[in-house]
Length: 98
Image 1: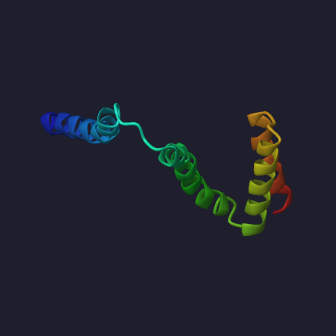
Image 2 (image 1 turned 120 degrees about the horizontal axis):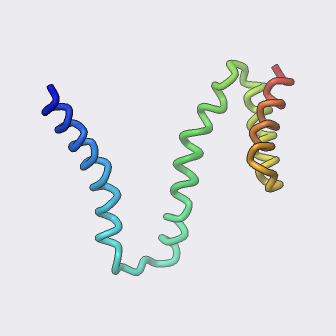
């Protein structure tokens, strides 16, 4: 049981590490065109948005209040307000629209 658990942990570590290490090693000496540099720079933002946005829409059980909270949070973020205030603004907007 313990041996299989260690094998599982090592396998999971390898599966997590290898996909991150391979691009760094293979692309280390390659100069990408500016288009691909710009494109790859936005991948983390797109992936994070794809992960968070469905959660926002289903967070309150009411689409109207969830959208209000999300919109207020985005507006406050665009104004570069403190992160705590962004979260509080989103919560308050969702609460008052319920």
